Image (cartoon, rainbow, N blue to C red):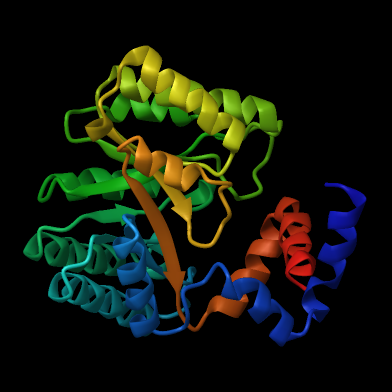
Length: 300
């Protein structure tokens, strides 16, 4: 972590809420369901698909986990009602994974049934390493009742290649990202170039095994290498999509994806927990502090 990032990080708890809101405003699609769905409609009109996420994780009560689950169920209903090109992404600890195995299984089952009811897709996001095995097991359990479900793998984890090789099947659908959680070197690659190289290697493995992969990165140099790999291996556009976080600038790459006929899915987070989410993310991943603050002052 460079000196600037460390300096800004030390002041994160003191940043006035109004300034954090201005930072988050570009990357969070509002606080309400209506604001988020309006954002999805706008993205669809521009040619983008979407996945929607309610901000929050590590809920402290069964009541809150159930409330979040019901909110996601309502989102599935609204997506269908409004004919939106959008699926749903959930964080396991947001719907009860930490609290109770039975509670989590019950909530996940409800959401899986709702996805099936509307012929939609459910993405089970991956959180930090204590939850990796539990999340993979939950994903595998879901597949026994409904196949339009997927999970997420992180390129910086040493274990990811082995995990993928054990899971590959004709219905395997996963998102690959670099990983944002701070993990021990025994668990995760630390050097950015090595992470990018492993990301590219994992994409190659996914293409060879003909599964469906959501390529989630904002690394422009890496995207250039992925384009070369797609051409080299002659991969059809039906076997992958590019995924990006809402609001992150991509220097024309989103338009380039669409021009090439590639699907682009935007991850759209929203909810009243935008403040806690923003502060937590800054603390957990100090490497983005410089980027976020630099963007803020550029806007100013």
